[in-house]
Length: 226
Image 1 (spheres, helix red, strand yellow):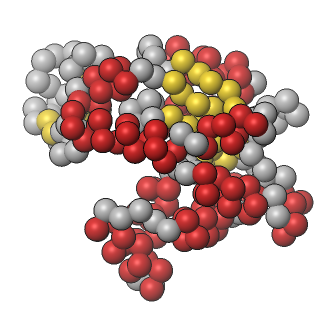
Image 2 (cartoon, rainbow, N blue to C red):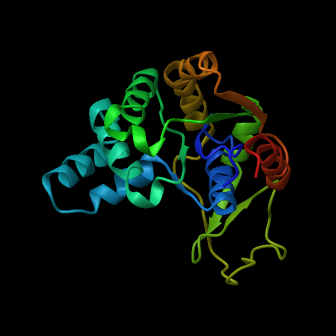
Image 3 (tube, one colour):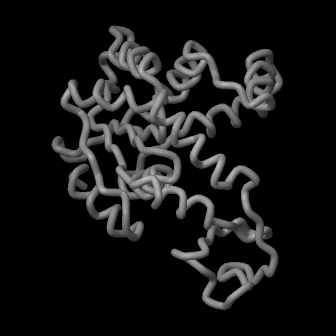
């Protein structure tokens, strides 16, 4: 990879800002893995040991994962050999204490030779009304899970999935106005303090997250340098 290419990246943004989508695009373009804590937790929960049972209990109850456990799981994932050429963290860290603990782990003497410290933090900025529209309007094919949206991406033929031809569609139970507003409030209260932390380190770059996926991806491409 070119020396100017940012390869250890944190993707931040409010719920519905598109960070998951853009993380996936960036992962494919750079050939590095993208992780969300949710993905890691679900993977751990499929195990059978004591840690798996502990994580599964937290997920089932909808509880937040303690910082110490979250950092330990993320550290275990990041320092696998296949991730030492770069990584993308999708929506993690979620709070200031996690950001500080993550920095401590990534920059520890134990891992110094791997150069795993964060290079870049991308903050996708999207107005609240845009986020609400984006989330409460989304739905998916019940058969192949292809995502659609009432305003932004409907099937080419009404009521028929473009990919598999399915005629049944589902919505996530928590994609409601009330839930979205609650998640936005939680983001501002818990996650927003992480933003100035990375800004003071000179790592933060803000990106306008409105508009088509490819337009936002092009903005990110120019910042990352691939």
